[in-house]
Length: 121
Image (tube, rainbow, N blue to C red; front, top):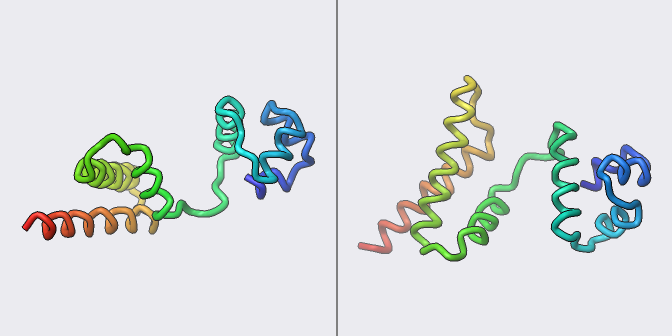
């Protein structure tokens, strides 16, 4: 987010995001935004049409674990495996090779499958 706003003045970025300059400054300094502000920030960042770096597989796995906190561990693993598979299929449907981070995610959940099978045995 900081990289995206660095190319604009603070006021202009805040105007584009529809938040106050002080709110944007506070967020960039590390404060946690309210959910409505967070949604505006996420929407604006998505509208920028580019990512500053590829997703981090570890962060994706941690996020999935947080989102599926009410599920059993094997259900979380199954969900991760399905998400990775869907991502790979979406790239392949567009005749694109899945990016490295998708391949890493597939490997992550393939290894989880073998670990789960070993733990049951």
